[in-house]
Length: 319
Image (cartoon, rainbow, N blue to C red; front, side, top):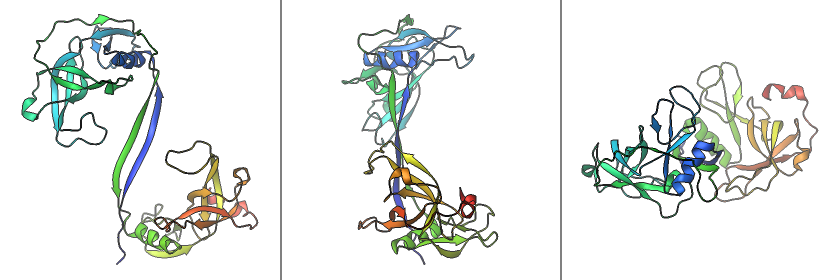
């Protein structure tokens, strides 16, 4: 029986976005230890502030300052903090309605245990020592023995000394364990022997690479293995001009869809061994296997074979 493989995988990318005047003022205020909200047409104060009224879609811009103290409206205990969370020790996730606000702000509460947390408890902001204009400028909330204040939200111009925060970078990351199953495990084992195999659908007779264990068109199981390639044809491609983090490849480079000989599905791979501006549809290519002891089962890239270009009619269905 073929060994079923599994491996830890990480999907990670930075998401960069610009800020409008409301969000810009809110984050700049946090840097200056000031919490701002926005007032709606019916007088409610929303914290964190939004640019449009969620009830009426009216554009909002009437900024107000609220207190750094508030009341827990609901909570949940986090027994095992994950990487990148506000605190490294167990803490409570809390919704806090700050004094002067009508909505609650989600953040962490530093507490010794779940028995020390309750709905209705009073808390206050613990400011981070180093503040840059991000929600993490609030390091967390902490218990506060003060009484509920009747403080009203005060109008604020949203102006602060120093440069305003106009954009943020959010790092999205997903860690998971991937198990490829029977069909793809056999495919990966074949690659370790520098062979490329697909599976043929018993109904439509198409050969899919990498195999999926079932035909995506007919929906029937596949089991018949078919060796394809190793040569193939570039069906379409793109030129990459932005260098990816942790990828030791100089830009520009070409990423292409390649229809391997005998396959009915194009796979994607990098093209090298030819100037990027000479890559074209119909270019015949072959794999170059990496010599790395840890990654020897994978083609590092594809390079031109020197054969004449393939006729468009031979690969047009795979573009």
